Image (tube, rainbow, N blue to C red; front, top):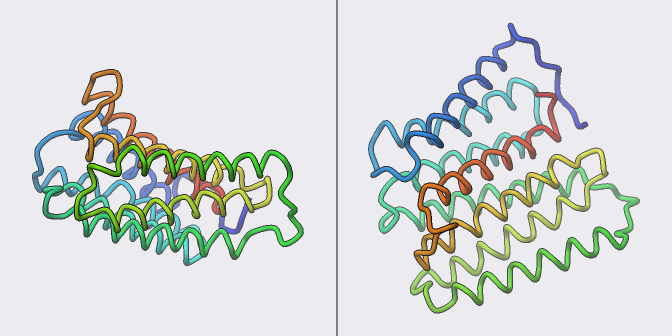
Length: 224
């Protein structure tokens, strides 16, 4: 694993992680898919914000903490009316992904030469990005440039995670989960299509993949 202290149950970080887990469950099981409201915004934002607090208390790299804060801001924007706040949410997550790229670049293995598995992962990420953009292209409207940029940046973030040492595997899994969550969300937002014909299943998939992504990336750099 990376830097950071170990966690004990009387540590303030444990409280932050408990708040995170509760907020993630409450939002995912009770509030996801409901109309915008102040409680919904608070709970959704609190999930990753509490993880950012825990990461900071555990002396995580600054880029990780900053990325979590940016993503929490993105969650706040996306909890509001998407017709008005989607661009702001995209921008916040762009910042978050850029910070994750900086984090992964700083911790990448300088001696690593990508083998067949990593090369296949890079190819799969690129193929998914191109396929997703082609699938959404006619439905993006004025947000087309922003979405193209977002897909490029999140794909780069995922690719950079595979340049880390194998000990950082939770970050690799987390980055893939992030990419999958955003792909499902994009198809739902721009094409109105849902998984298994269920909006609830789609909301659960998007949210809990996203939560797993943030936890996985964080766990690669601190001991949770």
